[in-house]
Image (tube, rainbow, N blue to C red; front, side):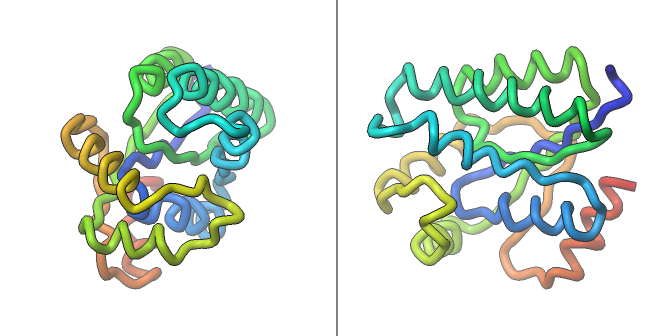
Length: 168
């Protein structure tokens, strides 16, 4: 199954992972899987730091990603990459697929601004304090990625150009 490719966008909340996923979908015709749709179903009324919820999220995401790869040669999805359950899912996917990880970098104040102004109907609702805490943990974890893209003030065309070099 190694011929199938996963582009995994990793970064803090508000860094623009979903936006970049939609650019990849639109300009490179690689299906963007909005895993947050699955996450919202799993979450229910649980808190975002509930251990059982976090474990279930990554099980559902991995199962969904594998299912999507039955119908597509390449997909893209996103994660903050924080949890040990993420690490387990990532290792499992690496065993069966070609995974290209892309760190999305953005300034803290810009991430917070983006989270405050984004469409809450398609994202998990989080407070400013939760965003700051999660994003601090993302930085501290320092996940190693294959590529990185700064998403502070680039135009769509600049981002598309950078993505094209990764996807080639």
